[in-house]
Image (cartoon, rainbow, N blue to C red):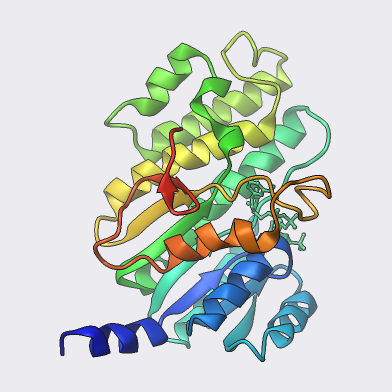
Length: 268
Ligand SMILES: NC(=O)c1ccc[n+]([C@@H]2O[C@H](COP(=O)([O-])OP(=O)(O)OC[C@H]3O[C@@H](n4cnc5c(N)ncnc54)[C@H](OP(=O)(O)O)[C@@H]3O)[C@@H](O)[C@H]2O)c1
């Protein structure tokens, strides 16, 4: 089958996982994807929250709840097993993320565990279920701009042969340096969230090269009114989520390895 009819069938059948789907940008992304005809698997770490959030979207389309804590290997394995029963996946939105208060070695470790290693673990666990042409979206931030680190680190992260081990090595170096009080001397800022999103952007480029039959992109939603973004943020969740939805529904000819905001490429 070819032509618009086939495209419509494939589009309607898209099955897309969204992590951190119980509130904020994740919940709104689930809503937008369900409205567009996707079968959404709304993942949240609290099963009751997942069920409640999925039920709240029942009038929008097909939304199934799932339990997933992105820092817990057992939870990830159980979630991947549960996803298997749905059949192949056409998209994964790595939206779950955290900004912890304070700044020390423990905050740095927990931030990178959630915002960098979390999306990597989920992508690895679900990769066998992702159909060729499927999308992987990393919900990132312009706070992870390259300019937050020294020129030396920028060069290291922009190396064309950068691989996942090198990205994770920079993450480990940052955590150690924060614990030892040496992070500024090594070219890092005193902001674990920025470093986590910068390394997530670098990881996006690496995964796009590793997973050439998928489209792997990072999206900055802008500064959005959510529990994390706060009330003074200028953007609504609808505005912030629309760029995430766009990247999750990219066609097979869509871009890969980029950072986007509102569907437009941006620098990092
Ligand atoms: N809001 C902004 O201005 C803004 C700007 C740029 C990027 N972002 C990014 O957008 C994404 C969504 O943020 P948001 O603004 O919607 O924030 P939010 O309202 O605080 O939501 C964060 C979501 O992540 C989940 N989460 C945190 N740790 C988790 C874990 N270990 N396992 C599973 N889920 C976990 C939370 O679940 P619980 O309810 O269980 O805590 C919640 O569903 C994040 O990646 C954030 O960094 C936000």
